Length: 319
Length: 319
Image (cartoon, rainbow over all chains, first blue to last red; front, side, top):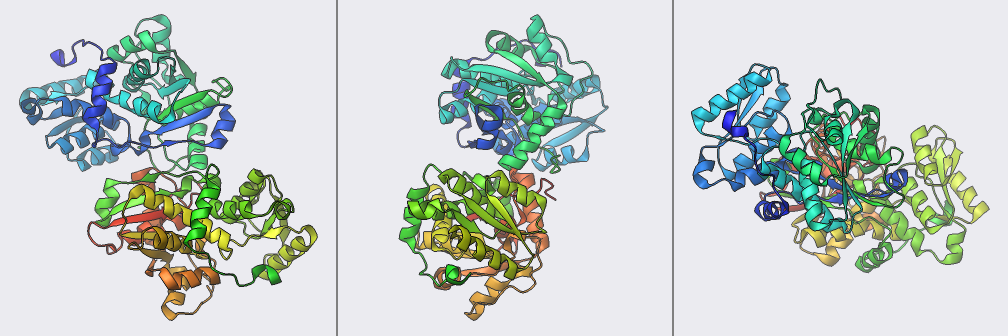
């Protein structure tokens, strides 16, 4: 991708605040739900920010919108481009449709039909390539040169990170004082944005990342102080397979209290509880922070804990 | 049940208002969710009052609480009693636990283990009887004489009806002007309470009942102006098998705009859409009003329609 993925200055709290203003009226202000039963099980008071109800089905819509609506008019007219076939692809497609500009999503030719349909359903053009990272980046690069569309990285882009932080900002506003915030970590955009929001609005709130044991690169990276790539990750959390990004890593090093690991079995149990007890559907990735809260239990007795339920793009079969 | 099911004066709007005050701090103020996709499909603006997130898993908690907290101290001390093994049984058990009084729930001995566990999980005493209406009423009567516990009927009790109306009152407050309100109808407590709330707070709002084709006794009763019992009802909506009650019927005759029938296939499709598009789990009964909204479509283009999503006590398998 050459110049498209150059190092960038990480965003700060002011960028999260201006994202909030930019997203007003476009992004759903999702509800904050609570459950006495889950509180009892965790020995803490949990406040769930329901980004599974967000437009396009996940928090990714916040970052994608912030990027799309930050573009100048001429730049925007050429469209936007990404190579995520997951939630970011859907989110970018919807954001572009709302702004009325083209979106291109590069996808491996073996991607499930349902992902293609979701992205096309939001009006984006899907471009197929061979199923390798190299082919994906080559195709994105070619499309960029051909169309001039702006590449929007799913978690390195500072506008995306700032946008993701708006979820935590709303949660802090609605739930009041929180002792902790917890969010899942894959590429790190959500967790980094959450850290920025807490640092700016509620510096006493400690922010934890929640990561599957089988994809523990963020845990290892923060522990060792250097970026470890995710090698052959194995987890049911298909949204958390990517490696931690450089820009999020810089933010996490400065203001994340730590990463907690948890196994797939606990994650699936937490997801089942969200269905049985709270009647809401989540993707497995979204259940990782609750799984952390229920293990041990992790948070001190009676602590007030905000949890970002990251998304709900999942099959209905919530086993 | 003899004297326990005598004819009663139907409640009015003042009773709904005082229920609102009585339930404050006990009942969840459930969120109102919207979905642009479902709006497009229905050609109307839909506002979903999420009683599937209500404590005990359904709106029934409102009515049960209003009844339980209306009792005088001495009367309450003897406990409460019902013979519903469904949502009302669970709701009454939880309401009684909160007030700190005994609850007795009569259940047929062939009731599914999961219903017994749910009721016992809320601390009520389950009493089994033979699986017939007669045996159920005889057992309830015996228990009443033995313990003095107050029988709380699931939809004839005016305190229960008034309590159910508080959901619509909150919805009208939050969503602002609504052209229509729609609620499922089984025994009729929820629909009657909804009618009272609309008549008192927003007289221009037309209230419709939504009923499965295979359990159309409310439709026939309102059409003919006399109460028809539900005979061998057949529907996936296990919460709507009961016959319309006398007290609700009196209210519906006076202020319900009509009952719309819809088939099980449409109901299951609506329920699937609530999962796929809104990421929430409902029981089939709760999806009946959405099924009505999507058929034809029923509501005029652009109308503002409030829908009571009555409950979420369902298996996770939301097909």
